[in-house]
Image (cartoon, rainbow over all chains, first blue to last red; front, side, top):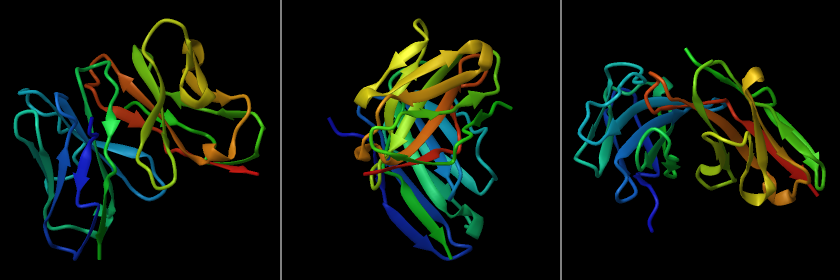
Length: 114
Length: 115
């Protein structure tokens, strides 16, 4: 079956603009995660959705970052008033049932803020 | 806060050499442990995982890892590497008690295998 998909694959924006990144999880996966990978660093957790429960937003670096998920489908990560330090690869992952299921990752969105 | 350390940032090996990549984590409770791999131009893929049971875990492509609880380690090994193993390898930990379901990743090890 299809894996996790993300769009766009690349996004270049100017400082101060808002961006929206999209993630389509694997069908049937109830859990969805966003991570960020800055150049030369490991992946950094941002936010996690599980079914209808309140999302775990503990990794969001500032209030400029927000994410939504409709049911158990698509999620969008929004970054408002982008800054140069937001430049990174943003990765989405999904899994079946917490806490022991493997997370499957999408190809990522490379965000460059000029 | 929990952390994951990968001490080797860049490793260069010749084909057929043995590989061991270190991974240590800083949490004393129950954890799930993972190694993910990212081949050039591809996205992250699961290499192997440890949830419970036998601490020696075998994954795809001849990789294995050993969970040593007393050392908080989950080192990745392969007895004989191939050129196609050139990739970036990430160790990750999922803390099961009070940690939610987020993975904490190490900074990655870039492996280059030379012919």
